[in-house]
Length: 371
Image 1: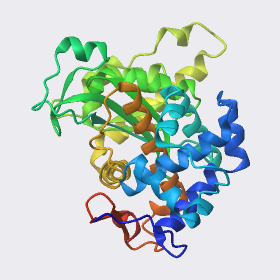
Image 2: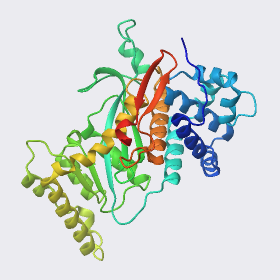
Image 3: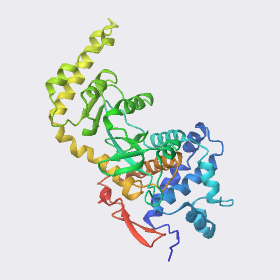
Image 4: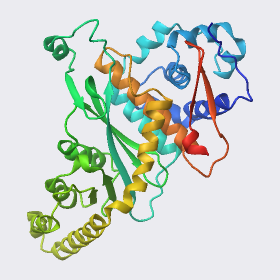
């Protein structure tokens, strides 16, 4: 027996969704969406609300649409005055825009909702997760040629095993635990090989500044990446070292880059900054185990995305739709985090219970963030 999406203003789920919908439908958000090339802003807002509800309750888009057509109170909650669009109309509308458009919209809305407070240097946490498209390969095998046409390939992860999909890197700011960037990688490249791509994305978006600290796990370990972080991006790249790490070898590699000597007027200043970054890096590497609890924030964020919002396996069959859904899940998780549900000081929700309408099972999430 299937449950309905019975709207109740006292239900913690709808209280949270109401706050999220208020952000999505605000004047600032409308301006942002319009500036990213979306002409039908109202349709984008409504489609986002519906897709967020689908993700939040782990139900299909069709089911949400059917419930909206059935329940007048629910339509009022969604602020729908006209006819409810069909699921196919929503899917077609969302597919008009590339994944990059959703990344820009999500980043801009999150940043205007909870702007980064710049008081000196900031600390960012970086981690990646494989995205499994949940192909049933036992029922139907996909050839390499088929996957190549779809811009997909077989990948391997120690936590997933072999899968068909891609990898998503998420960067969150330490204090607020808010996601500030998401980078989608084709296949499953090793973390150490995508370090430069991540850093370049953060620099282009002006997220990182000189002297900021970025914390990576051992997957990004490489002597070259320490060097790139300090020389090219002027940040402290705290990459957790492996057992064979030798600090003397790193010290020998961290020599002044050539650009330091190109401008005689700025040479002394550049040397001072380089030496300072080097000293801070060595100090933090020696005590890297103390930073493990800090990295727990991004692990909690991934738990919210994977367990609470079902990012672990996506029932999508094209790279574009999978990337779009991944971005929207991270966007929704970022809004939940922005509203304070990542704080252990918060006691607003002790436990959020969600009824899965498809199989009458209950599931809980946000428990680890709010107790």
